[in-house]
Image (cartoon, rainbow, N blue to C red; front, side, top):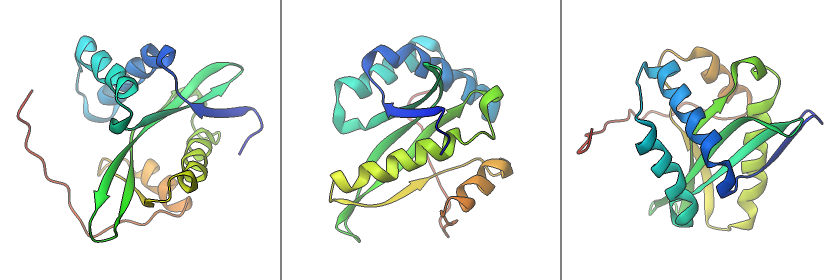
Length: 154
């Protein structure tokens, strides 16, 4: 991890940057334009309800350059909680500099504080080969599962 990169748990005052990152990530990866009022309310909801999860932010020179969200999922098969890593975003000019690595290490180091955590999961766009390579390098393995969803709200 670079000494220049500082990672911390996000605080409510970070919500605007996180919301902007989420909208940028959706446009970049899926060509989706997220309504800022909806995403802003969703980000703030995480801070109001810790059961939803938490955000981590990476800073360089006191500027937030990346973030991710961790959400819990109970696994009855493991009698434990998987931490899902979501909403990963690193500003383009800071990519390939260890920002995601620092964020992931922060999450891994936080897990022992919660003895129920049994592992980490994330999903990634099929075409995002660069991200997939990063996840493999950091020790994650592709699973045999495919993700399905059905939205009830658009």
